Amino acid sequence: MMTGSVRQDEFPSPEQRMPEWDGDHVHDMASGGADADGELLGIDPAELADDDLMREMHSLHRTRLDTLRHATDSALANHLRRTAELETEYLARHPGREVDPSRLRDA
Image 1 (tube, rainbow, N blue to C red):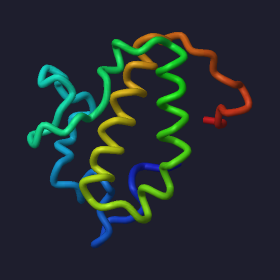
Image 2: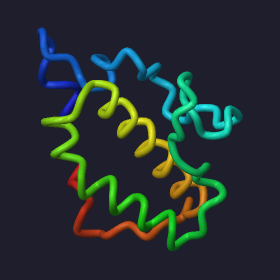
Image 3: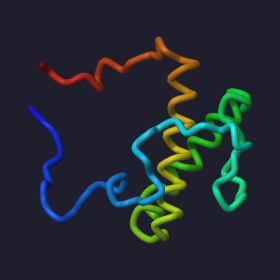
Image 4: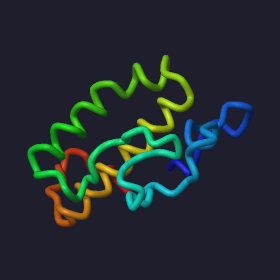
């Protein structure tokens, strides 16, 4: 049984390391999808068609490891934020999503 992070030392999670990440997985998009510098951060996930939402999630997941290992802190923070936004929107649209029984763990 896992009860939390295995690492409790000087290696914090990416979310803990990112000064831009405030722990709130759904950022307010009222600013028009821009950061403090006015840089475009992506279309509000609620405005994306289902196919576009899936395409965006596939793209982020495809680049996840490379971003985690090699991107700047700000790029990683943006990746984390965008992934959380898109996945939150997906879950809101599919609250009764199909769960694969082979993915269940014995209690």
